[in-house]
Length: 474
Image 1 (cartoon, helix red, strand yellow):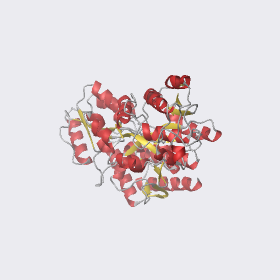
Image 2 (tube, one colour; image 1 turned 120 degrees about the vertical axis):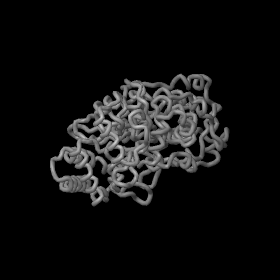
Image 3 (cartoon, helix red, strand yellow; image 1 turned 90 degrees about the vertical axis):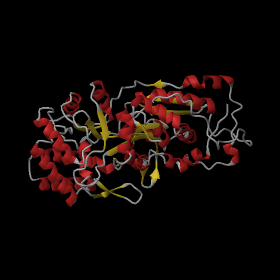
Image 4 (cartoon, helix red, strand yellow; image 1 turned 180 degrees about the horizontal axis):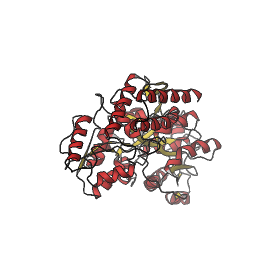
């Protein structure tokens, strides 16, 4: 068995390879070591089952939750440009006897174990897959990586990237030409301070889901949609004109965000490299105030209500009680089971500009503390970036692949393809630590405005001042 590793993986691992180091022979590996490599991959750990968390709002969670996962590993053949098979008098850089550990949730543990077998057969190394609760991976990784007890690779959402970089636990990835093979929004999501840190594989976002039996035509804008919905309610054919979920205590700025962007009021200003500037809260603007005033009108008219929870909104749409709902792919299976005929399209603009939802991206990150960085980078860059693996990952969770060619292959799945098309035009949820200071004030203020608990401008201005104060305080 012979170690093969690309120059890209070596560069990502921060290793300057000589020809001798690149050409590593593992001819001395024992037959016992080789024969046992595949069987040693394990989905160890308690493996708590994680559900979709895409509906998270003011508590700080965007829809960066469950991406797809399944896999055969069949297409993870070694790419061209790999190392030669013999070394000029040097020992192995890595390979036989080396172990890399991957943290993944239940959905991804099985497919990663499958592709790990191919990697083990090619390198003689061992890959240990440990199941973790998806929602806890980022914080546990930040806590354990500095102690040397953390994994070499994690599977998680992009929105925690800033905190991982800030804590020095994640290493940049040298994607090189591979970057152009992924959807632009996914590379932006994996970028922090101008450097790419993650290999994206799945995209998730909300969109407008339209009941085509109640509303056969695509609405021109939000007002058009509401007019159609209100007529259906008046005629006794619907109960709700337009559904957007709200938490009774914390609101839901995540689901409201497309409308806010249509007024030209994104949360933070963009930086030249496509990131976000935590010092420029751009929703603290006249455009933000206009959105707040519009939100108050919708509350007064009964279009938006603080009593419409996630479950209420989902159940009402599944029962055919509304022509429209703003939601994500996690609810689509229930609509299909209920026999609702629907299509998925852009959230209608309320402020005249395109309504852009937050986009959550899941991907693979390599630990900056990995003792086998070369192997870890090779596994991520050479094995997990192929079209077939990305397609296999899509099959379990039903999320749009980040790789363009893989996304093209799944367009026969209308739900994933339509959500993915909307997401491609969206904006990554900010991956900067400052977002932690935003969610609570943002959600409770929007809820108060909808419920008519004060002047919308005054409430919005107070919210922005509070958020800026929290960011400044660190």
